Every structure is written in structure tokens, then in C-alpha cells.
Length: 77
Image (cartoon, rainbow, N blue to C red; front, side, top):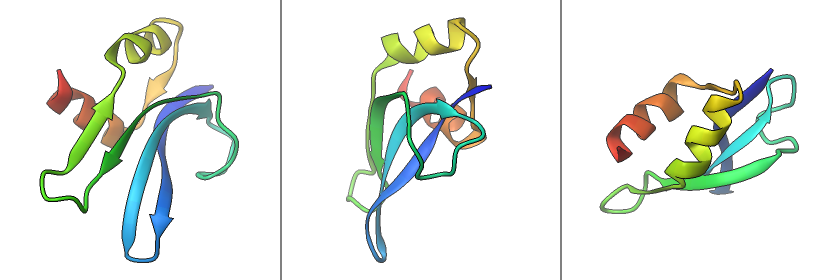
């Protein structure tokens, strides 16, 4: 199953997340198919960049969103 979820980047105590499309059987930071955005919870305004067009495409072909990505996508729309 294809999932849209976040993969952790950044450094210790300074997380930065990339929103990616990946196979659900892969590890959190394992390989991914496509990066469709990023989220920085540490910045003052909690920066969120998300390609809504690509998100809608992947959902239309059957990708499932993780609960966190679903919440963030709701904030972006």
C-alpha cells in the first residue's frame, strides 16, 4: 500500500520533516517515491510547504495519508 507520511530530517533536537509518498512497508526514513512537501515545526511560524496538486493525485490513485499528514493538509487547504 502506498502511504503519504513524514520522514524526519534535520539534526538532534531540531527536527525537520519531509512529506513523502512511500510504500507502507518501508522504514520511516527508508526510500520514498516522491517528495511533495516539507514541514518545519521549530520555526517561529511552523513553516509548511505542500504541493496540493500532487497530494490530490496520489490520493486519487489510492495512497493513504497518515493522521499527521491528514491534519497538516487540512490546515493548508
